[in-house]
Length: 120
Length: 324
Image (cartoon, rainbow over all chains, first blue to last red; front, side, top):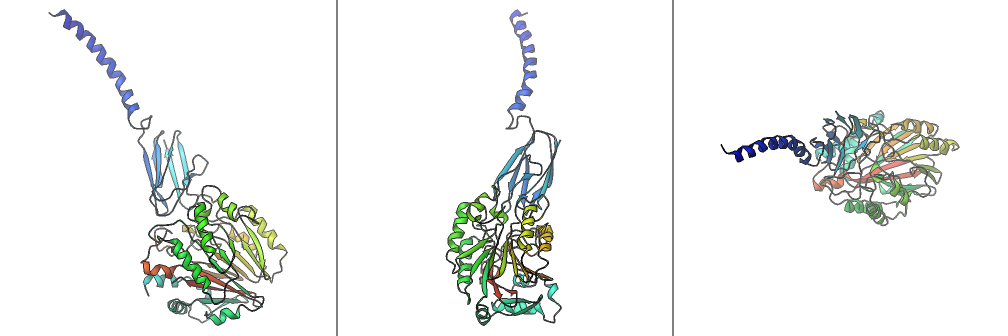
């Protein structure tokens, strides 16, 4: 019987358990820029329309609109929550949704272009 | 002629089909020949005749005048539908300067710039200085009021205007009204004049005699061209209601980058070509964006509109001509 080895073994197990408890929290906090762990979401602007027109995302998501059209557009919420500067071809606008709800928006230059983000 | 030229010429002219003249055939011949088409309105009945330099000279006798409308120069646009909008604007000025009867002034019905940038407005101002006509009256398009609620537009062109830039003026007894229908647009809506401007319109024409010819110019069409694409104005009916008493009302618009005309009682609606790029006919494409055509055809889809006032007819003759 080796008294020293028994001593080390008895320390190792509690240490391992403690590390297992700590690791998951640190891992998720370290993944990507989004601290809450929600994956980024995209809306493509093309042919005078937002695609997808309705996008459903979890709370904490950053939605990025990218203009792939050959005409400038804007992204403006209908109740003053967000408002982009004008975005020409290739330019983007992002907004992080921290509260659940339904956010309708439109292009203030071409108001027939409308869209919706549903945050759950 | 190519299909595109056929399409442009087959404009909806149903209102005018009752007088025995085959307009479709007439329009095709005129455009093919490269001449302009002169529309005159006598007592509310439109009549077409070939535009010749004699007609132009006749229009310039004392008390008469003419002006040219250009539209949608989109200075700053550089995509494939037209990589050089400066060149096509210059070609439009050359066209104006070569008219048999030099115009007394110019009207620009908006989308002067593409992104409301100061350097874009500067370039248009510079190019327009090359025109024989030195007086220029403008109204903004939606591309001229991006980001700053029209602040840069008003700083430059807002002198003697009210609200978002509307105003009126007289020329030889004809009453001109420049309207702004591109501000405070609502989600899902069309162009909008707004309550303040409508009140101003009512007051502005209240004391004019009904024989005063009226010319209204605004960017987005004041009639319902194609609502699905935003080609119309939500509250234009109210504005037109204030103009009901007048015997001659001519409405000049831009925004749709193609010629469209409609006559309703005493009101003639007319939209101009762009000097920058063409757009598809209503419903003929997924969206109303810039329409790319072979380079050699571009000039035939861009152009200017010459308008002649012949006194005594209380009517205005509207002549469109392409750049090439």
